[in-house]
Image 1 (cartoon, rainbow, N blue to C red):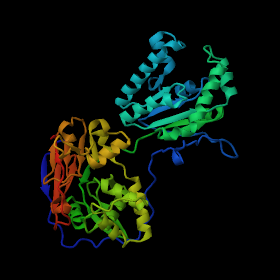
Image 2 (cartoon, rainbow, N blue to C red):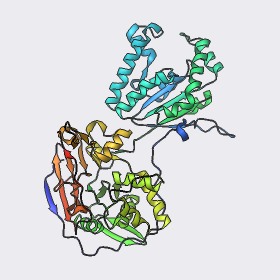
Image 3 (cartoon, rainbow, N blue to C red):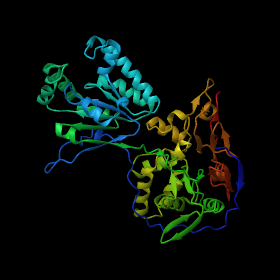
Image 4 (cartoon, rainbow, N blue to C red):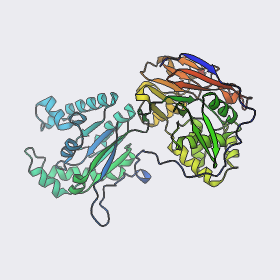
Length: 481
């Protein structure tokens, strides 16, 4: 998309709607992310129920992930892989031995085979392809390089463990042309049991454990889109920069964008005659005087399906505070907490649920548009890792130059991705367009303007701040020293 024109909406009204009824409601739906079990223990949800018939297991696998099969020889890993994954998705250690030595059973080729295996895994993950590793992987030492590849590629790792009885594995092994032998299988199981309870702490997003052949046979794999994948959302979009509680300005901006906003029954009802959708770039909260109505409008709009919202760094910090974590009260958080004191418990409960569902970035319009509060380089788009989350929330981390001066990294200087990236976080006087990226945080809360980008039209619409609600701190200089 090209940015083709700019427009200014009318001056903000002296008095906007007085804000919502502050009674809350139920929170948003739970996030679609799978974590290791409590205390880092693996989620062993493949255990059979205490009574009744076994229900076929549905294993949720992120659409882009590294799947690590773990278990002794004879456990049925290869059969499971061929049943549930494509031939090119599975990288087998036996196959890699054959590639380098013309013999799957040549143990002297194991080191070379795993060099090949790790190379294939790295290349596939770099290209954004789901990858399944079929090997015993029964020790932390075997799993460690695979998890390092997943971290480097910013994709989740999922473990599928075949902790089947020894006699089952030995009986199956005896029917194979190339046998591992009972002694080797017993050793595999012993190695597995030594580390199984700690797998959740190794870096796996989730660990599924099978303990009977019936559980394996009944299992189905469910490919689940990553939370950032909203490519089916085609727009058109009105993308709104950092609001920071500038309620009157937000209402004026929505008027300028053609939105009809009505407060009815304690909830905001939004409609656009052209069928547009709002996208909030995060940092709805802190500093400004109208944080509560801003939050309720955003929550109501998202709940009704006319808006999307991603998290900014200020929402991430507020969520930690609302969850009871000890956080530093700075950056305008005091204003948010003071204004939330005037709301009831139901509103605050709904707010916690809403904030917990906010993702760090979205891919929209078939991947042609990416929205992230602090921006996001091409190699991180559509990925999910702590590093991706940090970058999406804050942009490039500041660093010290040779003279000790704090310098903010500028990822836009080298951006050459296919997607247009729209972001905020760092206030600028006018929308900043560079290398297929657009910064629309025009510093409303500091006395600047509140800006929206109309996509795909490429038009800016903005309203001036009624006044400066906060004093802007000097930012680290962008670019290299």
